[in-house]
Length: 314
Image (cartoon, rainbow, N blue to C red; front, side, top):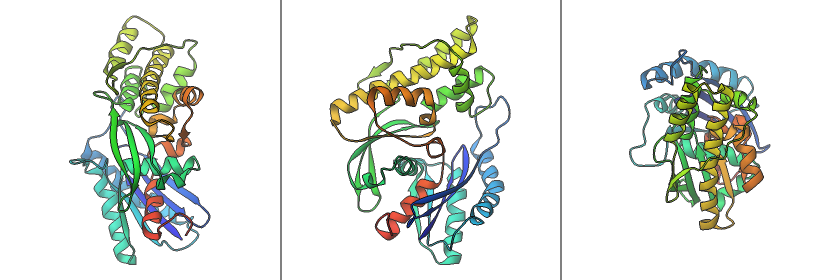
């Protein structure tokens, strides 16, 4: 069976197909265009960009489809939390419900966050974890959270917030530091490439309040490093080492509190090799490939399959 996924986030227009029998994902996605020097798009701009891009991406995706679509999954909100809302997700939801109505298909509505987690599980070869408790980190431009995940009859799995950044989010830190260094938005790949040219490795003491971290100091310290004339590659490295230090502290807390529960890392920030390699070396865990760490619609398609068929091997 073949399931269509749509996700229209504040960064990327994403489409995907999940073929359940062969456990194969096909993707077609594109970043939203952002003006040089800008740190993102207003919601009205994101909505307009999605409207322009989505039909073209869908046409390209469906040319690869091995058969008819059996169901549709779509991200309709950022997170499964009260008041979580972004207009940009209305574009994907409207198109998904229109496709489903014309073809008499079922729509499974999910949060962007649960889609990220499902995509990470798929990429790591750990989809069976949807039926068990585990811990998930979600690090992106709008979120830096540690979540306790457990099976849920209605949602497939539900998430409970256990730790977070109290101010700046990891992806925001990356983009703001990238912006001050003259990098285009989103700055993740370029900042990583710059940091890899550094010969430094910083041991940063992160700021915590309980299990929650504070990341606002990263931007301030990097701005001072820039004004002091330090090399851009070293500033980039300090930024990423600081995010790693905070994530490591949260991971240590999780392991003490939740013991040997599996830990899954998701979200665009986790495609960064510097952060990922250090976490892997010291703590292990499950990670997605970069195409499934960044914004995608694969998770929505996979969750639609599970919700509508009762499993992942239909």
